[in-house]
Image 1 (tube, rainbow, N blue to C red):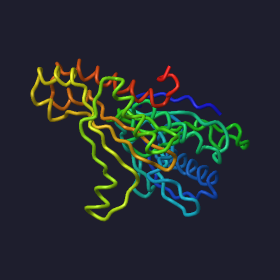
Image 2 (cartoon, rainbow, N blue to C red; image 1 turned 30 degrees about the horizontal axis):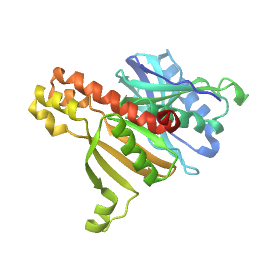
Image 3 (cartoon, rainbow, N blue to C red; image 1 turned 45 degrees about the vertical axis):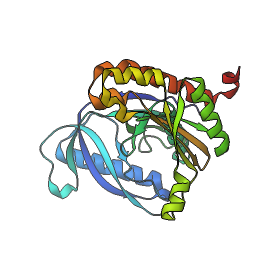
Length: 292
């Protein structure tokens, strides 16, 4: 299934929230039960729904144990909600979310979450809150799981780094990163082997982890001409680190320089540095094109 992802800001809205327990082995029953409880409380309080019911997962759903999740229902606010209902009315502020739709059974919904996370990594966003599922067509409406439509929303913010994931060995990733940086005008002026330092000085063991300090002399000179304090944030750190499925290469976003120092004049060299770093990391993903 192909998942299309977009980023939008949710509107402010009043939400009826009820924390309830669900089990992964009785997921559909738990969702239907929670939705029925939402409807029952809303009706008793004289509330009118104006959106699809939701579940917010404050931690990952375990394989066996039950967890408490927040069932929610966007509503038109009304005052007749008593404490005995176990529910509360909250006003949700606008938030930036990345979202996609999953069609079909909940057993395959993990694919939608993977697609969302991969899209975030490749498009400069990071998750900043728990995911919420909105049941546009839920199990309380249809019995055929193929007809279910679930929108997944993850609160996001712009990432502080440019990143690329490589399916290769750590030494190869380091060599390719050095070459790509050099070809785009950056020299590696510092190097810190975090794995070796922690092992030798603290007796701790982590995955292969290297920090390279990359500097473009021309852009650094332009930044220092504008503000000598720019040197506090030079050079740009480029992290090469192993993970379970390959190697992650991450570069600090140079445009943060202008924001941290509150100097709009730094935006020009910072944006050029970001463009060159992004091009260098893009070459890592397409070595054949870069070589050509």
